[in-house]
Length: 230
Image (cartoon, rainbow, N blue to C red; front, side):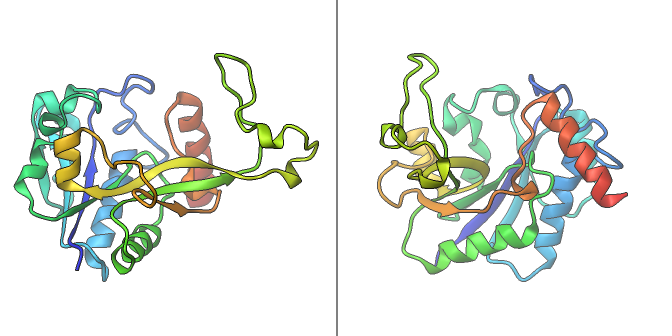
């Protein structure tokens, strides 16, 4: 059987949206939604051997918020909390050395509408199939352009006037990944990017998979959240 650690992590140093995880989001915060999601999963019949949220004590607001929830907390170093994800993965993800699961399922805390059932279904699919990594994608029927050259990348669609007749492409949805723990630590990369590693797990396009990377996206998602939960 595949052992999976369910992993979340957050930090306060957001550059594109100031205080993104701790500022008010409707009647809550993105981090509270994140922790509630993990808490709910922990109470459900789930496929995970362990669950942890990685936070650094230097991020005092986040650390204080964790005290409201009964979820295991991994203490990140200051380097881990401040470094780029492309830096030395053994230092960025040092806390993964404390676990022995073969696989990690990381869930992104910037998807406020992501459902617990979606996370569990993806993990169960992964465990039941002969694949070593998983990455979410959605189908895109459109022209795709190179911004540097101004040229069309998917030239097979260049003669088609309507997108109805396009050959689809896959676009990444960064809501969660599944990868081998040791592969990440040893290679500074989630997967080798060969066929089925990662396996491309197709999801539908809807509010569940709305990501927050910019202030405009934050405002849009907060508006929807207030409409849904008022």
